[in-house]
Length: 548
Image (cartoon, rainbow, N blue to C red):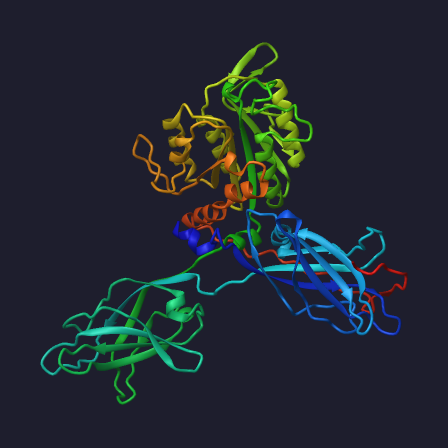
């Protein structure tokens, strides 16, 4: 839970900035080059289109690099639809529309180097060349997400008390923007010693250096006195960055030439909290595995009251809505777009007879349950509903075990798996399910359970370990909270809110797993727009309809 707070507030999202440049823009001015400006619109829920920012105007330039950044709040669990419209600004007359590009914020953030590139197009969707636009997304970091851990001890400190040894303590001050030092940390006092070993220190970077590991720090050692002012022993200067390689410092006194002793830092660890976007930019993929409940409690598939009923043209049932809502969001984060589609609790025909299975392929291929894209997911589900007999009971053990298998089959640390289980009722193997969840907490896996229908889902709430840490009957405890349960009826016919509720905990769960296993995000891949061959752009004086 703490890691989630450090990486992404699920209510706030993550602040990002968008930087925009264009290349080879069409030149719409007769005697000079275009004066481009980009306007950014977001289409929000309900179809409301809103201007959220605009760049500056760059005069006479068909290859502008705009300096104005566009601030946004990135939400992993939402599709944030954006339009980038570029105009040639003409003072005293109508602005000329150069072209536009539409994409989602997710597409930008998961692109190579977090840079989305595409051709600008006219609203009429003609094939005329209008130039290219490059949109780079960057997380707006506070710069203070981390902590410093160390031990420090003094050696042969100068003696300040006439009739006894010193009572030393250590302080750390940081320089502020005006060049003055302000005290930000103090150790405990060690009594009657010239060779103190102070307790282990854990301090946030925001407190000790305001997030700047190269900010000058002053370390002072003092002798505590009960009945008079404390005596200054000596000081030294360093930075957090320097502390990682230099551990021993001589203490000096401005009025004394003789050494005042030394201090030694031990076990120095700089811990920088990584964000979800750090892992995305480093190439992490999120894979989706879907498991669908085919138990008899769903009701006969030909009955309009059945949760699997397919007889309403143009209207999705609850299972279809859940698959579509989650699949549409996650499709941006999986490069190969291949999704294993599984079922449980149904009878399947093996060519000779019908057998109940608690983990089978929805596409009818037992050796490869993967399908391509959201349409493939919907097609596999439809195929299964028409070919699988509903049976039971409702068992999660085998499905979660399969999810663990998918999550661990790759040696690539840059893959994280989400197992989406859609079910209509009470599970009949709670003890074994908890055992598998405890195992799953140790692998790169999150489990999302969507409850459809009107059954009692109290057992699902117990699996969602928000309040207590799950523990199996052997006393093994989950290392992470990886289960999120969502009742479908609460968000019925509102796919955006359903997806937001279902996926909101995933970023924190992914970062928590990576942190527990000391997996740092790789250096982000970079994207460099191609060099411009023709700096002049190209002329086009064909009539263009003015923007509405």
